[in-house]
Image (cartoon, rainbow, N blue to C red):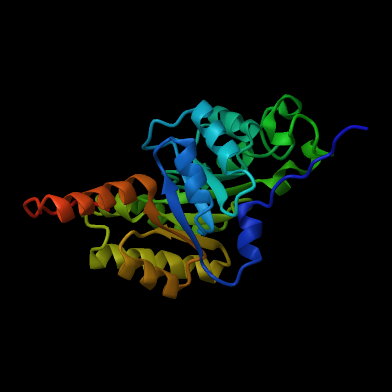
Length: 269
């Protein structure tokens, strides 16, 4: 008798079942052991990043396999919103996508089409050969694939903020994620994601998303800023990163046993 499997709950569904902000961390190291450690740490979700890291299809696959079955839900960020690359990510078994640098409603609508099969979209049909359908072991995958996928778009420029109302109105996106660092740079405040003008822009975007009934997330490593955004009503948030945690912790050990280095100001994180 053929084996039949079911897909994991996607991130949008997980948020719908929760009454609090989902707390997550970045996984930037490209290392499956580190990803597994983070996935079993107690956080709600992980962002496996391929925009600013050496991650490729193979390393993403290995990390998805490592975190499978652990409590944290993995989301993956490709380097850009190319439909061909998204097709590969989906067939790889990525269920939750965060697309960077989405500036217009038209771009958001194109991404919705990229994650859906015809006639609603343009996703190529190859799931029977892929991990997405567990090699054709998920019954009726083609007809229900969109139920397994959640799509989030990243708002991180002044242009995106100006177009936010129309982006929020795009049917098929499951939420927006605000990137304060790139937004700060776009506002002429490079490296100042905790500047009061940046925070005000982020909070205004959060309020607009809440009013539109769209899930909204944000990146915030400073605890006070993270607490502020959680109080503002974000549905999901990233509060740390594997590589940053390792960097700061090893620095603290060096400081404890060797002595402090001259003070310096970090531009980010």
